[in-house]
Image 1: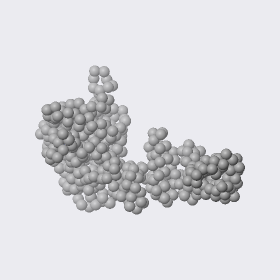
Image 2: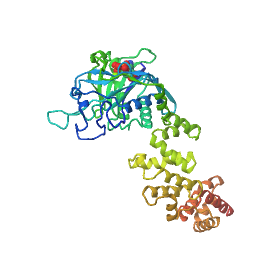
Image 3: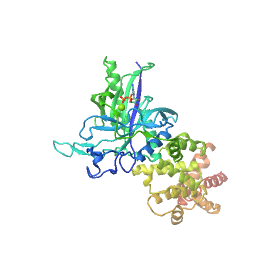
Image 4: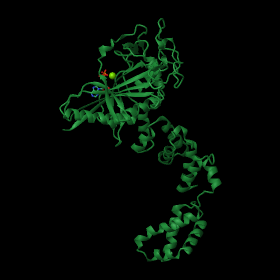
Length: 484
Ligand code: ADP
Ligand code: MG
């Protein structure tokens, strides 16, 4: 039996407002427990929520970025349940009239093809507090700093068909929200978490299978691993004659498995009703147009422009538009050196290699975009050759000079293109290598091309890497062939 995987994601994005969605308390990460929870966040009687306009603007910008319908009216509802980290006894969310309607996101797959994933809707809600189980023996601590932090929950249609597609979708959402600047997208700090809905069905069958929902997966890698495990579990279960039950499961990264948490609750368990403390949100056309005019260039547009206007490959365009910081760095390098292909090669090659080795993000690159652009310019105008360029890069990386030019000067790396100087070095190498010259003379003409490498190496060494390799090659061939 051939099986097909069906996946839908609910992504929670923490919006980068300075204060909470319904109160003035700070949202800064990492403060002492309970120092950033005010009377509203604590659900004390007699206080009223006030909607943070910035959260609304950010949600709408996301909607515009994914080409979604933005309804004129959206409404906040109370989702009622009890939990120690929810002192109000309900979460303020949007159940029936979300702020963002249906939209779509383009994802890029490994073979550089693209696919559209539909977004069902996105709604605003508040986060709950945190239960701290580890710090207190036999007790649970409650930190309400996170209570009331604005979240945008983005619900996809069940359009993904593999773990790779799900990861690509999550990456696309991550890059849209970080391009927009509406979230820091920091998954390790919980700024982006997702619930993964997974089901399987026999290939060719139209009806979806029963799904399991894996809660709170917080890294791209875990999304893939959780899906891989879950798909296998469901297929095995069905093939053994069992049935998948609709339930909520938890991914355990240490054991690399998902475990049942509880059977799925129904919407009516929560007794949703419109929050009487908050007015419906009404957005007029002028406001939407104002927000639309402030949208930056988005990842998909940047990718298309990198390909169509700069002539980059689909692969390069995708990598370089992957994050806003990466794109901005690349564009600055390109602006300085004027050669898109070279800029792309250096950013993805030498620079990314060095960043990965030292586990640095591009924002913290010791070599600035300006410096890298100038370095590339010196290769393009033949001041230095490729080999010397790598030395200059290393020196810039190590802080041994503040520009390519000062390093080239200090290290004497200027490319030697003076024919007289090159000829002199070649004559000397030939004079010192009688055995290799004899070998060259005696070998088949078609093998001589390969043998020339030895002489080029010697001349480059004699020039301390500064000779122009093409020139060395040409002159050497002439001189050696003259000896035949
Ligand atoms: P609920 O409100 O119970 O969470 P929804 O219908 O809103 O359920 O769906 C939640 C998520 O589950 C959506 O992202 C949707 O795409 C996904 N989903 C729904 N049905 C399936 C299915 N059979 N297999 C995989 N994912 C599904
Ligand atoms: Mg759900």
